[in-house]
Image 1: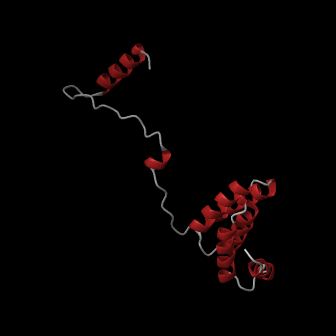
Image 2: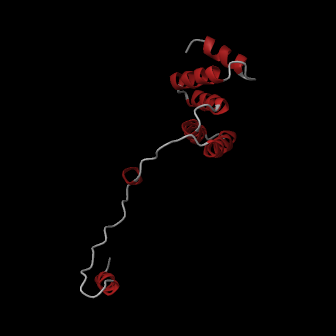
Image 3: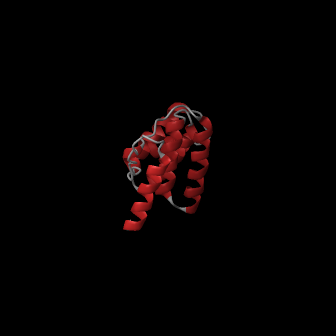
Amino acid sequence: MTRALRLLCALAAVLACSPGQEPVPQEPPEEDAGVAATREYAFNPLQAEKEFKVGVHYARKGSHKAAAMRFREAVKWNPGMAEAWLRLGESLDRLGEKKEARLAYGKYLELDPEGKSARQVRAKLARKP
């Protein structure tokens, strides 16, 4: 920041104060988003559906890492969303993360044991890891 700009900012802070009041120094915003806010998840099926749709888009493009990230977000917003668990398993499987994929497939089967993809998922789980 140039000296002139700093002086202008200080002058603006002084002028913004009421007479007799000292200026309150402003702290710069937190640069690290991870430190600034940690996300808390609560049941939100609308947000889960949004994340799921974006994940499907990424999966169709072949961006399985981005898809897996979105499917993880979807199941955090709605842990009972069986289709998101299935798609998470598929994305992780394509990324070579077999152990995590098996866990996601297991959760899918737990939530929807008679689902349209249950037979194929059981066949994948029956194979050696």
